[in-house]
Amino acid sequence: MTTRSPGSDRLVFPYPRLYLRLALYIGAALAVFVLLGAASLALIASYELRGYSLARQSPLAKDAAVILARDGKSGLREWLANGVIENDDFTVFVLNQNSQDLLDRPLPMGLEDFVRESVVARPESTGENYMPVRLAPQLVAPDGEILTFLVLPKGISLWGSPATLFGLIVTALLVTGAIAWLIARIFGRPIVELQRAVRDLASGHADARVPAVIARRTDELGALAADFNRMSRKLNALIVGREQLMQELSHELRAPLARLQAALALAGARNSLTMAEREQVDTEIGRMDKVIGELLRFSRLNTVDVVARRLIRLDALLTDLVETEKVESAARGCRLTLESDAALTMVGDPELLKRGFENILRNAIRFAPRGSEVELAARRGRKGISVTVSDRGPGVPEGYLEQIFEPFVRAPGVAEGGQSSGLGLAIARRVFELHDGSVEALARAGGGLIIRVNLLEAKLQ
Image (cartoon, rainbow, N blue to C red):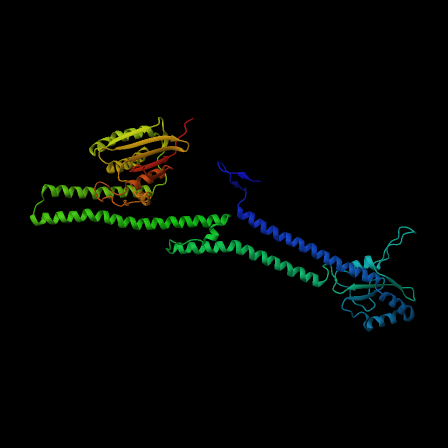
């Protein structure tokens, strides 16, 4: 029985695929064993049937009857001892009523009771017109003693011939070995490759990967390999990002430090600081403080997986934010407008959300030309809430539309320094990711940039 996953047409099996494959292989092995068993039984039955026919219809019985009538039991014993019993296919036994052979040879192991009860013993007759079938011909000695002439195929046993039994065992071992090898290859190789990749990763090789042929498998081992590869890529990206972050941070701090050193050197030469130099020192110290503060904030956000959850009126939050930022937009000679649907509700941390939208708005205001308009719009859609911030600034080359959300990444032609820490959009993206949302940058027709934020709307009953 199968079920369908909620919101998807994909079939979901009640048992893991790995178990199903293992059950399939074991079932196939059992089916092969059943077929081999049936074939072996057919061979054994055919072999026994030939032996049964030989025992009942052997022409040696007639020769033995002639010798017994002419020479008695001693002559028959001599005839048996002179080689008639030496045959590659069968063995001749002449048994008295006690199931003892004339040459005192033992019957094959396991057949003593069967021969005594079903071959030598006189079958019971249930009527004058009914003669029971005998499994072996009988001879009558001159003294009236009844002897049973029994011809048995050599090597007969309850399991059939030794060749049949040996072939069955060898075939079973071959099938078992083949199935075991197949299972070991199918399930063992992915585990070995995964173990190797884990060891490589533990040794510091962040580029360790499980081979793609294993990660593409449709069972649990394939899913585990794919998850490991995703984890490895994520770790590698984090390590590369950390190294890049340290390089960018060093660059961001080195520039104001160099300017501070220059100002202090000039002041040292004159033994005094002018008002302009004091302002320059304060500006550079403030810039370093801002970079360090934003870096700490970004670092804290990267270590957080869960944020405070409160019911928020997003339209009201954006309205308050626009009123606050209108002062800065007016100072830069641009206008800030808001269009929003009513009663946009969501669940999240209002302070973090305000910080995320504030960073996007300030980035748009900073690059907006004088006399232009920065447009903020919040709309309700089928998949949630969509908030867009649009400006008529210089825009961003297509190749940098995703990279501008990385720490300290600036599009070509954008001047460094100023009031930007280089972390604003990176912090915004992390804020919206913590709220199960996303953010993307789009080129605006006619010039400029659009930043779109997608968030989940709270459905109130």
